[in-house]
Amino acid sequence: MADFIIPKGSNYPFTVRVFQQNSYTPQDLTNATAELTIFDIADQCLKSTVTLTVLDALNGVLSGVIPDTDTINLVVNRGDAVDGYYLKAGYQGSIAITLPSDPDLVVLIDKVYVTPSAIVCA
Image 1 (cartoon, rainbow, N blue to C red):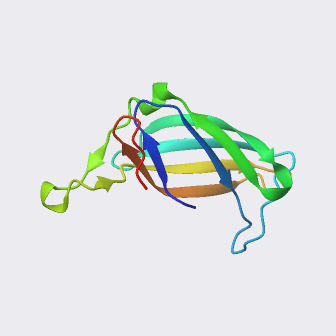
Image 2 (cartoon, rainbow, N blue to C red; image 1 turned 180 degrees about the horizontal axis):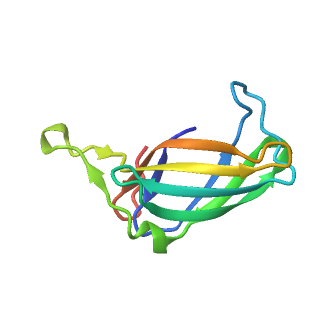
């Protein structure tokens, strides 16, 4: 899954598409429930939990919003001055999906970055 780049202190609406494992076929999310969790990489402390909405079940599309009350507490991690203060991922995420056919489907988000204020850079 792609990385998340979250603006600190702002609501972060997002849409994700889930594919079947080792495939480009969308995961059928009919009758699914899903929850996003964001964890600190350093100490694995939970930073945000969001219940997701199934937008398009047959095409594997989920959406949600990480509220500003959660993003305000996230830390902007930066590299060294010599390297231009590049953004460093300080968090990881996971989307736990419960399906009638597969109750333990988990999608990992390896890198979650936080940008200062509402500036989102690609």
